[in-house]
Image 1 (cartoon, rainbow, N blue to C red):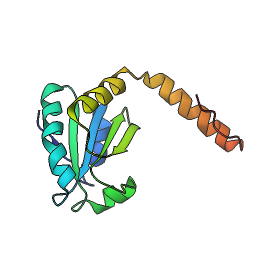
Image 2: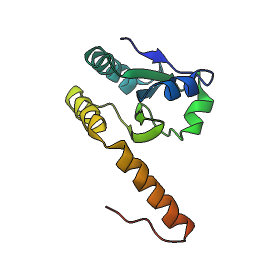
Image 3: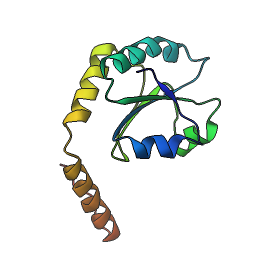
Image 4: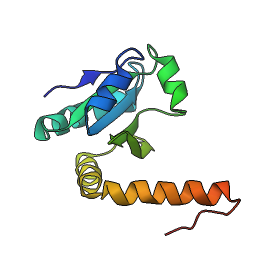
Length: 131
């Protein structure tokens, strides 16, 4: 499967309709983005069950701002409508595969419970526990 171009018009639907979405925030003038592109495309070919999407930060400045993208490329992974990973920098193939493997292995029920616990602690004025 090739990558999907995300825009502010289709972003919510694509992320909501798919349980596992990788998002590459990039720009055409960015050298590291161009270096990362074939690595990302290769991973898309190896993982046809996942959605690989791209956000052109020049064309989609509102999306980039909404996610507070400070540098590109930035890779984000959204599972079940929860952003579970976001990191700037062009990842080598082995590192990208490792991140995908770790993201697949996450127990999303546990992630949601941790989020609830952190929100409850914050609303009670407590500092979230590191764990």
